[in-house]
Image (cartoon, rainbow, N blue to C red; front, side, top):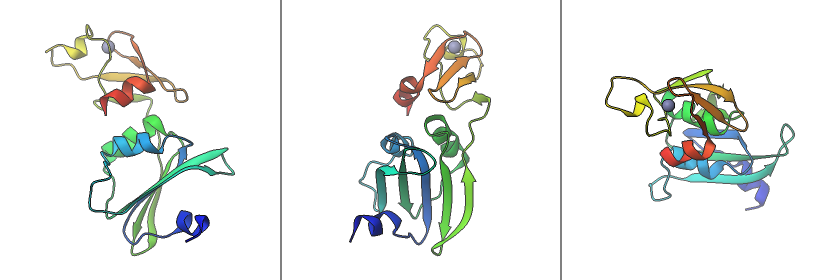
Length: 154
Ligand SMILES: [Zn+2]
């Protein structure tokens, strides 16, 4: 199989995550809990030449669709990604991920002294200061968390 055939090979049912920022496919795989030991076909392409961006990554997962929580997590690390749901070899849904301005309940504050990390009934809440590089500001303590802090939590 040529490189091009491998890249464009179709899947029957599942999800294709396209336009992932080049070099970030493995982070996306981590978010989705992909270990490589599940009994499904997963194709990961890294640093594919792209017209829109210099390079992009692609993750294809057979037999699995993503839930909204997973889509939000992907938006944190790959704000330009598009998610294609495939059924019977056809794209039935195409969705561009979008990072909301306010992020609640997906990640925790990296400041151990933050009230959101205490036993108080307070839900973690962040404002997006910057998408790329990712900078999130805690609503409660003003602590700034970065991509590496987010990755440590997934
Ligand atoms: Zn905080």
